[in-house]
Image (cartoon, rainbow, N blue to C red; front, side, top):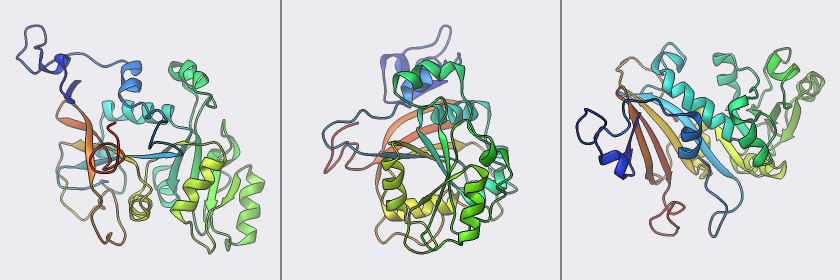
Length: 279
């Protein structure tokens, strides 16, 4: 792994026996180093309230999935970062279709991050929050019946009462975040913050991410660029209606290993540029 941006002395220095610019490319970063690289920004002037980041992977030709799943376009380092981002979050927000397609299970406690989470006042593992209008989910799955932290179900006020009752009977906590049958992204973020979850992570899928982008509630995108080409008609990382004016983000950091790029982009204005502080 090597850091390409921001440029540091380590970035520019040659690895032993290597060429200038290789830096620490020859060694695997520790989980502590990854946690430091992906730490949530500290609260401060212009940076208060919940902070929502997304973690997605895309091929060179823009595919967010292959054969309906993200795993085939990922690699081991991407999965280590995936685990690190989860370990830093209070809650992982995910769409119902992704839960069904990817076979979601409860987040687990990680010994490597136990002290870090305890110091931050966090539960041993993040909660999973499933965004669903229909509540068309298998509530007998371990995600709902045996999580370390109770799973949250985000839905609208007009959701079917029998499905709400089934969800609650399984042990899930139903959170109303919309006036109709659907979920309002702004209200969802506010509702999670009201439960004490201010470090938010979403893993998609593309439709949910598109809704969060359109609502203007996404603060950061952690995007892995996979050095693969898939062609086909796979979804992009964000779907749904286009925004009226493209939302500009600014590059916060970029790591590289084996041709994979691990990037972080922050909302322009919140992370530098007009209207906001530097990250």
